[in-house]
Length: 411
Image 1: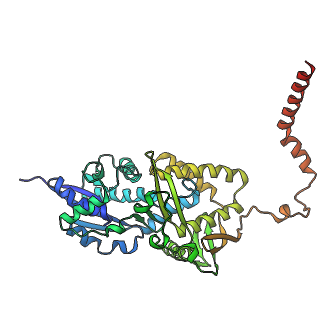
Image 2 (image 1 turned 45 degrees about the vertical axis):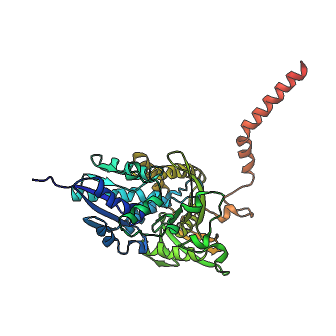
Image 3 (image 1 turned 90 degrees about the horizontal axis):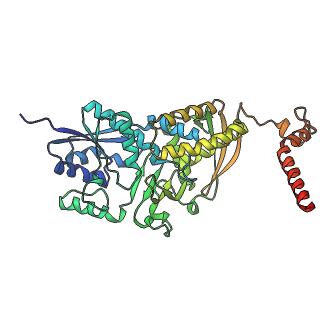
């Protein structure tokens, strides 16, 4: 009696890497059953025909899981509330998605009785860490196969040849073989001419979610976003489902050339990489949320939250979502959002987001205090005592320096 086949859950996108991996697994792992799992996080037409392609290349089953709403509410919203930005530019679109996808893979592995999870991440990239950290955190008994770390294939060109030799259609032409990752939050581009940081990106050829600022309309677009406890709920007064809200903001941002970032970043494993990111909706939401926090957070909380945002970005970039530190920081961040509710108006114009007014029932802005006109809540004379105390260390130091100088002159 033959042994039952080893069940392998493959993180499947239908892209070049995972198209190669299915036949490679069949050739290099005897008696295995490959279950392809794709998380639909808003890739659009990329999921069209995915099941047929997976089955045609050797998978026994292909599951396309609609994770869009959970991705937004359980991952993107906490990230928006944190204000996390990696190295000043990157809004973490791929980073935040990987732990969620890995969680779905673990869930399917447990449901199918699989022993192994396979992913197509390269041995040079961040995603291998993000996927595997999540698997180890949630199901440490599962084995992991990472073909890029074991096979003899060295390049995307060799992958294309591998498929051609076996008569398997490639999912893209050689000249279009950028490494791309798309979800509701962003679209990333790597590879080809972008591998040389000296090359200016050809936006006419590259961009897919929007247009370049130069080609954006000459007339600005005004929008109003409403938040409840740091979570966006309404656009222009209309309450929208989380998916619909991001789709609409991506459309408006894309038309106006919003959210294009070109970054040479530091990967977790130590090397630098260059990518171009399109994040129209995310860029708008970050700007609006920060404007609201300017109204609703006090000075010290704002300052400390900026420190937390940097650490949170580092955690997300490294894929450390399922860790005690991330959970603890999220608890702090949630506490800061208790009164982050209100409306923010923005002007979108040729790649720029211009603040156009904000309001909140929890605003800490007090016109009576802020006005140049003396009000009942503030006495200008109080400033003198405050300044005397605030500057006391500087005054004591200056007196000490004067004393030392006098002693030196006397000698």
